[in-house]
Structures are given as C-alpha cells and as structure tokens.
Length: 486
Ligand code: GLN
Image (cartoon, rainbow, N blue to C red; front, side, top):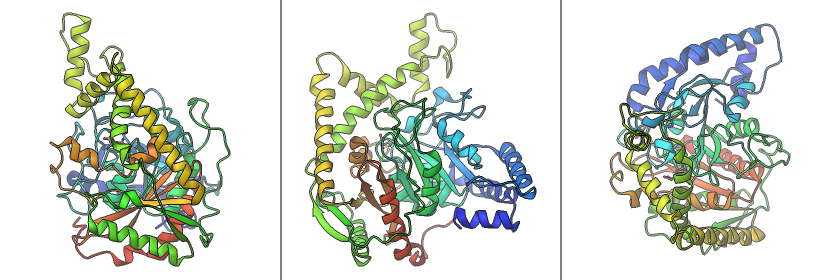
C-alpha cells in the first residue's frame, strides 16, 4: 500500500489512523523482540496523535499530506521530550529539549512518529552491530545483518513495522541498508535537507533521507523534509520541485551512465553484478540510452572517506565530556579524570577507533599529509562526476558489492566492514543525490540493490527513473519463496 492508498482509505473511513497505529504497535510487539529495530516505541503519544487525526477526518478538516501515517525515525535525530540515544551509552539518557527540523516538518505534515530506530553507534558502521543496545537483524533472514548504520530504519520498513522512515547517510547508511533489506532509500544532495537536530557524525557528508516501500512514498517524504532552513546554513535556498509530478514521465532518450569502475571490482558478487546489469537493460528497454562512463577516482573514495569522516567525527564528538549532558562517570577526583573516564566508558570501540584515527589525521605534522591530501582527492572525485554528467543524465551502479552478510561475519574485521561502502561513499564525498532500489534477489532469496546517482539537486530525475524502473521491473512479483521467515 502506498501513502496515496492509505490517504484514500483514511479519507473514506475504511480505516482509522488509530487502527493503523495499533496494527503497527501489535506487529512491533510480536516481531521486534527478535528484530530489535526500535530503541524506543512511542506508543502513547502515537495513539494520541492518531486520535487527533481521526477527529480531524471526522470533522472534514483538510488533511496534511502524511496525516495519520505511522513512520519511524533514526535515533540520531533529536525528538523533543523523547529519548535520543544515537545507540550510544554516552547518550543513553539524553532527552532533547528541541525537535530536529526534519522531524518537525514530518509532524507538521501529519505523520505519526511511532518510534526511534536502532543504528550503529553514532552512525559509525555498516551492520547495526555497533549499537550499544544490541544488534538489529535483517527481516529477510535473521542470521544476516540489515546493513547500517540506519539498519533499524530499513528493517522496520521491510518488516512492515511502519510505512516509512528517516535515516541518515554519511557514507552509505541509507542506501546500503535499503539494499540489504529490499526497500527504497534515498540520500539527498548535500544541502537539500536540514541537518539541524541531526546528531553530527561528519558534518560535510551527513544528509537525512527517507526509507520507503516504493519510490513514490520516498518522493513524498523527501517533498516534506526538503528546503532551506535558517537553522542550518549549509541548506541551499533553491526551490523544491514537485517530486511527484514528474514520477510518471517517460524516460525515453535519457542517457544513463554505467560507471565501469564499479563493475570491475574483485569483491563484487557475480549475482549482484548480473542483477544490476539486468536492471540497466530494463532501463534501455524503456527507451533510455546506456553509455559507459569512467570515473577513474571512484575507487579511491573509501580511503579518502576514512580520513575525512573520522577527522570530522573526532572534532564533533569532542563535545561529549560528561559535563552538561550525557553519561558522567561518578566519583572522579578531577575534571580531566571525569572527562576521560566518561568517554572511555561511554563510547564503544568503533567510535573510539574513529576518534583516534581522526585525531591522528588532524594532528600537527600529519594534517597536510592526510587530511589535506584527502580533501584534494575529494575534489578530484567530484571532478570525475562533473565530467561524467557532461555526457549523461544519471549514473548507475550497484548499491553494495554483496547482499546482506552474516551477523558477526565482519565485526572483527574493520577493513572488510568498511569495504561494503565502496560504491556508496563517492556520492557523499561529491555531495550528490543517490537512491537505492530493489532490482532482484540472490539465490538464497536476499534482495539486491541498484543505485542511481544524480547531479546536484536532480532528485526529481532520480525519482522519475527509479519510479519507471520500479513499475516495469515488478521485482516483488518475482520474490523468491525462500527468505523472509518472519
Ligand atoms: N558505514 C560507513 C561508516 O561506517 C557509513 C556510515 C554512515 O553513512 N553513517 O562510516
């Protein structure tokens, strides 16, 4: 069911918002003890909000676009009066006194916030296993990870625990879990969506974006959360187009670039490669032109990212000192001791690894060799994209090199874990919008994701192509009988 279907049912009285919320809460109660997609379930407030929407409907008041629809929010987005932990011990009792811009916009659009979702601690990870509150599992196969860091936002949509959700993407954290869980996930252009109230990981890369069951729902969420925000000076003041209007337009004559470097990597699973290339052929059948393009620096993205992201993280996370908020180690004798113990106990090991790498890369004597060099490579990566977009409208690549990997498989091997972001990171470094959508299944029945990368502020084109693909591919019609045991 799409948001449009739900709106219809709500308006006609076929279903009430309260029933929608109750149904999801019941489902969370039965399934989420296993999945662990939610860190907080907002039962009472969600039911109150639903009752309010039902009264609006009964009195014939005009409805907002998302009125009465239950959605979930990643736990790194501040929600006023509702615990926001970033899946970290250091923020385990943090209750924000303010609402993030994106959640405020969703609430103003009538959406009902059903809960806060599990994630990798401070959004650092690719499997939702670094959460201080236990891992989240993949609903397609609970021995597999849901991806990360927005694993809870992806698995909750995939398992039908909500109708859509918000995640954040610094190096792939929306697209990779969307791919692993068989849902749609979109990372907007840097500056399209406000970061105000998003707990910072790497500020020059972080963007908030939607997860949804289908492209049009993702477009609806993006429509609501986009736009200039006076509280975030990195948001750009250009008009937000109507994303829904262009969804059904033909893509005949559009030029789609296959990034050849993405298909040559050793770690790319054959089934993923075949399925994504099959997706490209389908777009060709729809009238698009497929052109091979080369982005020579694409594969340098990962090394570049793992200097820049930890550097920014080490600065951003310096604020957690146990003084004003967050976890504080008790009975320490001095300020230094209190601060260092609070951080030592409060942060998990992946977060500490990032702080150490970042502090090192930014320290005197190394900053030019590492941080500055990484920024230079970042510029070259962006230039490759600029060149490519002179020839094509959009770029196509797999979202992740593999389907969902096993729980525990990569947790002790950070290099292997980092490699799962190989294909998503370049879009963050260049600030480009990108979407992941299901394009097939591997032989064990796990979903495969296809990624489309657009030029800056071309979300409408991304969504249009994605929607045409979704309608033609009917991926879920051919859903294998295996998998999805829940
Ligand atoms: N997996 C990547 C990391 O660990 C990206 C995370 C993200 O996009 N938040 O940094």
